[in-house]
Length: 184
Image (cartoon, rainbow, N blue to C red):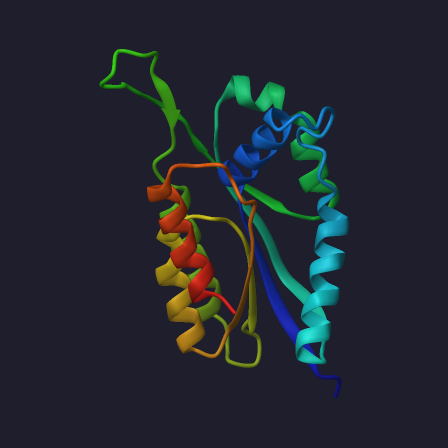
């Protein structure tokens, strides 16, 4: 029987969108939402194989994100790239959030981080031991996911975090650093 690394690939779509807007702001024209998720998956698979010595098979590939009709219209290329790479999209409605400083309201989602934690843990614990993933790949940078990483690592799951190094305030950087320090 072949030795296989069963991997689950989870993307925080809001984080991913933010990353590509930063790339655009950093002067890299034409790169907005141009990531090749199929190539990213293949590259990640090769890294897992090199680290574990096992052939990598993705049991699940999911993206979680907030959206609305306007975002959906603007993000068709992004969605198509995810679809072509076999990612299942899980979306939540964005709502307006008033700013205390008098600026225009911002759009906010309520459920992405908690849904990532809940669904990933559910995916792990509802499978028999032989069918569970043993490797988690997170394309995220949110410290709220540290509890998921810690819990799964306690169960013997290897965790890889893919992230973009944003130019952000130190408080956000610290939260992201907690996630990175928890991962393998």
